[in-house]
Image 1 (cartoon, rainbow, N blue to C red):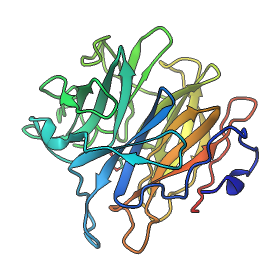
Image 2: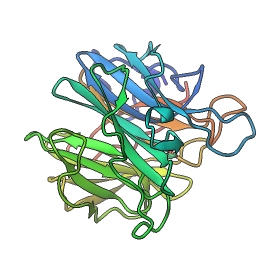
Image 3: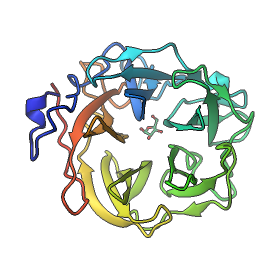
Length: 307
Ligand code: FUB
């Protein structure tokens, strides 16, 4: 990615850091990014695609953490969280998100449950954005329930948003998008699990963010996945579908996005399978491009850049 190629429809503020070349992490395969801004630093959390070349299935045992103050130079931190840190889980360090509250950092992560068939969502907690993180509950926050779930991977891809009144919401899901309030302790649901309506062709990867009084719920749609989005004035809906934000990710069946504002510029963080000859759906790489809004609050389509 380069600052010049970003100038598609608008120009970034001159003070806004331009992201480095895509993919931004090259020493490891990284997937399912989430990001958090804390005190002038961007913390990037990713899954780690460990599948060897030509092995066409996920091998994901841990999550990774990188930080940057300029969106170009990324420091990798010691591995902050592994599937094995959740004693009740057995596999699949899938998508996750870290959020800050009351001086602590809560990491919501999808894993394969160890004793119940299906995917589950756990939550780990730390005093620092870089960890070490420890299981905050000793059990799944969302456990699979095959009496109600139509698929064993229904409970994946958590995203958490805390509104201006301090109410935290957890969104997640595959095929159906769910949400529930979280208690202030961030480790228990507060009320029933609800279904999000108004998200056509929802596959997975919800990400909720706010910008100028609008809430945005972006998600991966169909296969190969493109990122689409809906907008609402309330986190509880109704959500109004707005269409495509980002086309199919190069050489990867999945895409998965995070959206942040940093130093006056919005960024779209995602993954594709573009890095060298071994890259692909099971060896993905995180990329970053600028994100721009229209005057009516809709988002301009993000065109992937590769340099
Ligand atoms: O990385 C495993 C799964 O692939 C994620 O949970 C989905 O969002 C998709 O990216």
